[in-house]
Image (cartoon, rainbow, N blue to C red):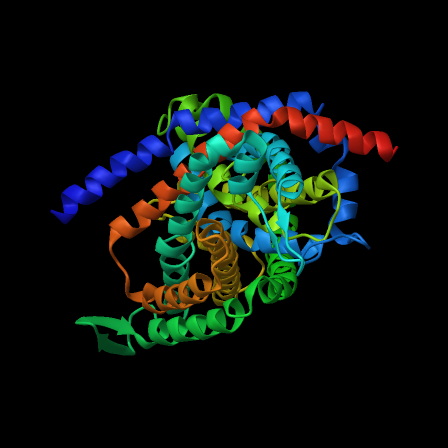
Length: 467
């Protein structure tokens, strides 16, 4: 029975994350790129400046940088380590090329999401801001589309509570800790009828306590923690990857050639293991979208809380999230995997591929390299938990019309889900979460397509006033 359920869910998951969704996301990104006249290229320096320079008299709950870090806390996660490795192993090195292409168009999509988030958000007398796809669907497209806004909010709530924000992340943290400290389960304890390493139990408890201390404080505490943890973890990982690339700098040109060649003729690089170019495209684009969430509608929920009066300004800041997540971090991971040949090693999958690349490419012992990767995984996963708690709360707030009681109850349910996460092994939970994550995109993409004229008008107005 369970095997049949898993098989059915896998079919649904493949349909949701299949070519139609990928083509739709790329089409929206391409449309916005053309209508905004390559804004992600010509205004990237301005966006990077705005990222660290907060608006002095803006209205909202947190700084623009804090809103960006909250969004990055959810996007920079295990997908940057595990997702890239999975894409390169399944689609060949060419998958990395298509991942970057998708991110390039995704920057225009993220920009539009940030613009609409600020334009259509609601800010009450206490400066509490609420916005995102549910509001720019309802207020931008009209009340008759409120059913579509509610569908998005329901999917967002389910994603945060049922998997991406809870079970998968804390399970990934506990597994990473166990693999480093107790790979053979030498120190074990029996719980719930199964045997677990003490490393899993302790890691699970620590993550639960840390999550509770942060999420009970709401968006301001999540943003303040994210502003410290996100830059730290990103810099740690980027510096590590840069060191690996510098130590193997002579291999970079041939790796780039392999990636580009693999993008258009995978069989020439993989020896026929992949064969079709569409496989490399699908794996790279799908994993890239999963990592940076461009088009899924999650980032504008955080962007709506930013202290700003200018939708375009926050749109530019939001756009930098995809640039940092995919074009910088995912590219570095992919290059590391291709340079060291980790993607060709038989029997390796997921995090083991990246771990092999670090151990082979870094000038440290295998233990030190594994420790660095474990720390990155732990921080990446923990911040994803915080980001998705915030997203889920805002979806629930929209559905319950701001019920504070519902939010408080949800926070404790969320903490409970984190507590039981290390002991969840049901494959269906992960697949259901993946389905909801992809399903979020459809209402959001409809809104982006319908409101692209609003984005263009706001953009022209802003740059006319700020020449």
